[in-house]
Length: 234
Ligand SMILES: [Zn+2]
Image 1 (cartoon, protein in one colour):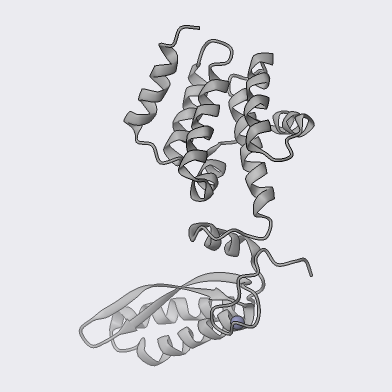
Image 2 (tube, helix red, strand yellow):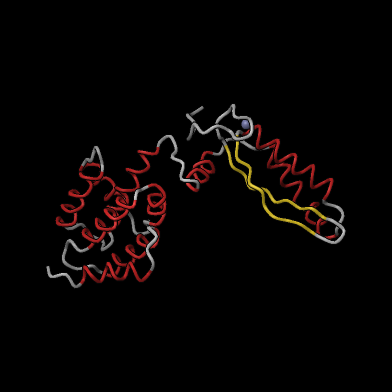
């Protein structure tokens, strides 16, 4: 079995590591009120399974008293029951959960590197080609930001970049973990690379809007920063 994505312990037993995060619907039917919603269970496989089965038991016990709850119980409870029985480790759900809480996973440093390289590659490739000046500026920034910057790695990310990729996921991830100062540096890096060839063109602007938005900038703020570069004398 591969290493766990995090050493954060299961909050329920505190023995095993966090292995899965599952959302299950819940229903309670009372004579006049019908309650429903979703509950999220995070923990080791065994604890989450127990929670899901307990939820099924509660639905079977309390889910009959209103017609709506009865329908939901009949339809949904067997699904939750089967999901509980088939439950296994789900690294992706743990990563999503920890990211939401801004708790670093065990491979946090690698993920930071990947995101930063990925963003640099996306800006360089946004206009469909690599300009030497874009690479030069990207290198300037990356060698300051990343402890072990390597040109070959940047070139690999550029080579693997394709139009369908968005900077959004990487930007959202970085935004959770970087300091205010780091955020400013990344925004500045983005603009400097985009304008390295003298013009910030449409596709670069589109990437910028996605990036700046994910970094928490309002539309107005990101427009202002972009326009400031447009007006800058070359
Ligand atoms: Zn547990």
